[in-house]
Length: 138
Ligand SMILES: CC(C)(COP(=O)(O)OP(=O)(O)OC[C@H]1O[C@@H](n2cnc3c(N)ncnc32)[C@H](O)[C@@H]1OP(=O)(O)O)[C@@H](O)C(=O)NCCC(=O)NCCS
Image (cartoon, rainbow, N blue to C red; front, side):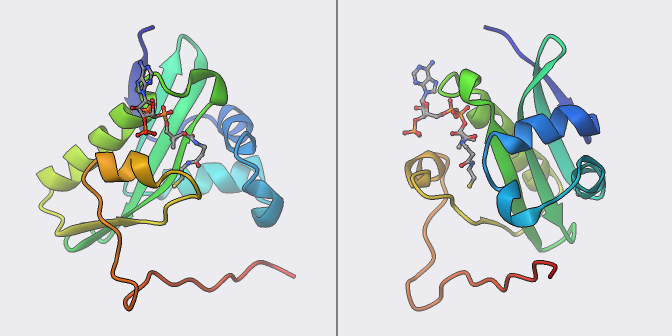
């Protein structure tokens, strides 16, 4: 199967449908327009297309110098384990390398550790973990 890889934010409705395959929006409650704005305001974004069907996505938020954070690596379940996620991740990392970004971080979803280890990521030390504060609207 061959895919077309594009940069930038995908159309709002197509992205909402892909995002909903993850179940993450149960806690975010984000609209299609909000998701599109988040993608558009990202430093770099890559989407994978099977013809006119959006089947994969990933994005980077960055200061453009020191740090980059990968978010929303998503491949439609019908297209998983075909190499789409790996291709998107390597395109995101290539751009980070080209721009001289010093480190790239991400929060790994449950069960996906092997995928990121295979792409060179290492776990943070247990006494220096990643931390987060949820600021969900009331
Ligand atoms: C994580 C995710 C993006 C990976 O996307 P993907 O397109 O399935 O990734 P790939 O196909 O490149 O690799 C996935 C696995 O399939 C294997 N694979 C790749 N091509 C393959 C092929 N042609 N045949 C069989 N297996 C293959 C890879 O070895 C890899 O194994 P690993 O998970 O043990 O590393 C995808 O599982 C996903 O969207 N999950 C739901 C959302 C999520 O949890 N995202 C992660 C947020 S941190």
